[in-house]
Length: 324
Image (tube, rainbow, N blue to C red):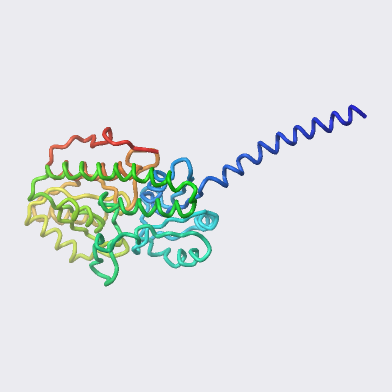
């Protein structure tokens, strides 16, 4: 009888220990805010603001174009299970807007760029009442998006609002440092060379913030088509203004850019590809360019060097706290 009681006690102890092991991760899962973000830039901001208190999944990885992206079955599962869904808005994820409207009736869904002061936005050249969504191209504007990310996280988990606010302030300081650095670098580009020719019109906020004329072969959305007349017009501009470098983008086909270069060559003018820029997506995860700070640093350094500035190829990667 004593042996039976002893065995029961041992089994109870083992089961009790097992209960501790199995329930601890469940408790952790309940306190970790599960976030799904559409773009890598938003996911990066959520990780910087949330730190160890959040687990973030980005739907769109390196080289993915958000303009035409449609949610997959696994995306839908992830978003319906998330505590918070962060998307950009301003018609960037055009194919997903209806889905977010429906999901917003059931889950916490926030379009972080929609909170920006409209005075800081550039009007869409084609559609009245719409705005250019590429606000991340100017860190001084992106600061406001980070603030909205912090607000959304705090609303989803009020107990950690002070931590989110503190992390956001630290990150926003880094963005201000990045913006100042970028201005110092592009100031070295000769005034008559400050013309940025890219695959699509994603760099207008960069142009406004740093004093560049921006020419995109395609429009604001990569869904727009670049006709032969448009390419011919840009060819004439490159030749007439003696522009020597153009830029491809990691998330856009270089087909139109190759046609542009061939057209310029046919007129006896030489133009080179000045580098590959990150426009609608960041670099590979785990790399410097896979962070927002690294993405912008890379773009600024690549543009400045290709257009005649004496700039170190290393950029400012050693001068910024890259964070988590």
